[in-house]
Length: 345
Image (tube, rainbow, N blue to C red):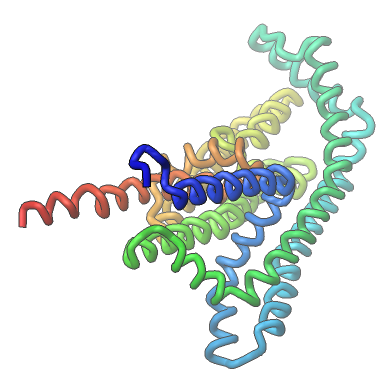
């Protein structure tokens, strides 16, 4: 064979890789809308993995029956409470979203207070019109996004069913095809499991804790619709950087604007110390207990994840950073340190 000629096996390999990568990109582009459903199914699978294996391999129950029971249980624990919260929010907020005069009046009250007390003109006519337009568009987006959410949820449970039923096979396939040694394969899978569990459990728990802390304070300081504001505070806890301040800061300003200086002061202190403090304490405890995650990984991971995956980026964003750092360590373990050590021996 001519030494300057490319070996046929190399050509076939390159052609196969090109076709495979091309098909993979095509499938990714056309099925990108399912990414949220797949990630949601993966998060639920991590939560259900241990009880699923317990029922299948120890109790000897049929896999399809175990998967069905776990999915029904998740509907009761996750979907029904979430639907209840959404129903309350929609019923409470719909008057404000359909008739922006409520919002305009509230902002006018805040604007008068800030202008008279501090000389600030934040909510002038131009800004108010923009805010009203934003709230109207937000209402339309919420209504329009309901169908998409239901579709993603159906896809999520469809994927989850096959993950649960074929979980053992799926995990064995991943272990066989990861290009790592056995120990490092276990490290990667453990990191994925711990990070997903940490954020899947931690995010709703922190939201509930902060919502409860907020509800107590709102009752003490005589906030109207304390339950609604508490729910909004819990939901706002997932917003990066701002967090619950997106709820209790405007509420505090509105309390001041209405002339209730005493409750306004104590409400601001309650939000800063109790609501904000509960986030720091419980977040550190949960993440240290479940996955030993550094707070900076969580912070930067959320920023990256939200841009890539939307809401589910709160779970999988920190995972990407942790996985990247782990793979760097594994690379040095497998391809840098070992050859150096063997050369010395």
